[in-house]
Image (cartoon, rainbow, N blue to C red; front, top):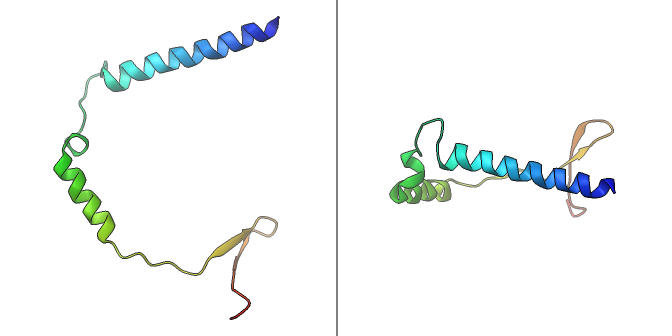
Amino acid sequence: MSTKYIVSAILGSFGIAWVCDYYVSEKKIFGGSTPGTITNKEWEEETDKKFQAWPRTAGPPVVMNPVTRQNFVVKSRSE
């Protein structure tokens, strides 16, 4: 019997949270506007080109040992 109350309360809280999020972020009830960096497609394309042009360098893979909180470099057996 209490399960239906718990489930309905959870669904109701999700509904209220969604409505609040919608009105605050989409309808802008507190004012403000969407930045031009989000609405401008040319800006998005240039930003994407910049991210794709960065050199990608990576070090050796590292595994975290949670017991001793030390990092150990993992090396293959051929090295």
